[in-house]
Image (cartoon, rainbow, N blue to C red; front, side):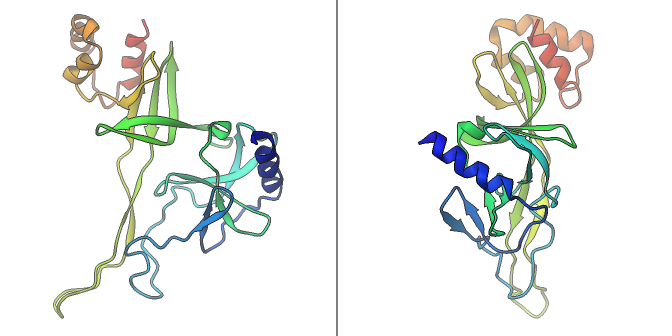
Length: 225
């Protein structure tokens, strides 16, 4: 079944255009999901403020399993890789292992479809690979939240339109076992992840005056020793 699916996707990608079309999003290969989440269409004719995209334009990318370049964009609200079908429908690439690596060429930005853990919950989605050494990897998750609009309850209040809002990037660490979890934000959290290296971690952090927000690659280098 995999080869026919790949052939079908290849045909679609060969006809990809460069501009997004308004309307629904088709996820996978058959069913359609309109952007009609709670609050999005609450006020007729009023579009939400902001965008679910960091870059609204489609740009060339290489995708595992696809021999040719593909024009794509990343939807940071719905965590989806989008392209356009020959019928001008905006489609989302199915989240399957065959298409797990996507690299945007102009920005040299590499997304990987992985299973990761956040707030003690497991997720499957796209993370950006920032740095790798000796089976340790630093990932980043881009995130745009959607906030529904609110209708004014009194004459003293104003209607609040729906909006998309860019959130702080989230960082993740993959260890040698392939487990991906929140990147530690303190010496205590790092030692909890690697209890066998507790003394070495304390010495490393102290001697190098490690800042857990700016020195993530240094921490990867230390772990990879």
